Length: 155
Image 1 (cartoon, one colour):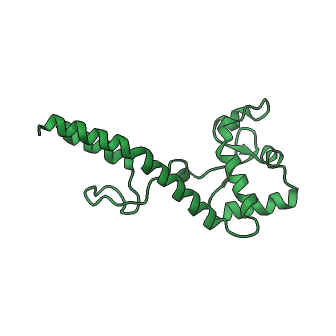
Image 2: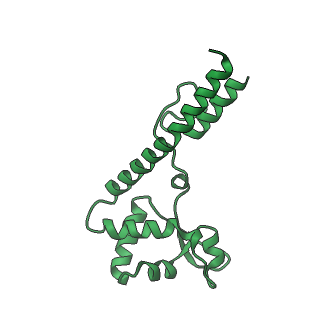
Image 3: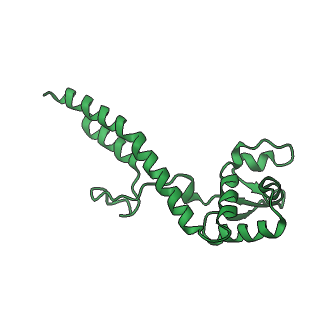
């Protein structure tokens, strides 16, 4: 078998495996989130996290610029959650303590906003790559590994 045929087979296998690996990562991320939000406020806190994750999708005359940056203003989050204020406050504090949401004060408008922490915007699978000394042993990006494998084959 020639190198070109091997490269084609490898590309085919990698392209076939990518969706299932990404789906497994999403399932694992969901299970981890549910386990850290366990308790009485779990559903409410999870609801707030989902709303804040979709902040960029909201088009709003008043808060459109903030939402476009991935920030969710406090008043808009309260309105979208459709929760009583006390339940909202408890769920929000639980999500903040769990590290799923972080507070952010917009300096231009002075609005109290919430956002998803940077490490959760693009989750990496929990795998290790012993060949890459630049990465920590607990974070390994599957896409970067595939790209590196393709580059190595081309050389």
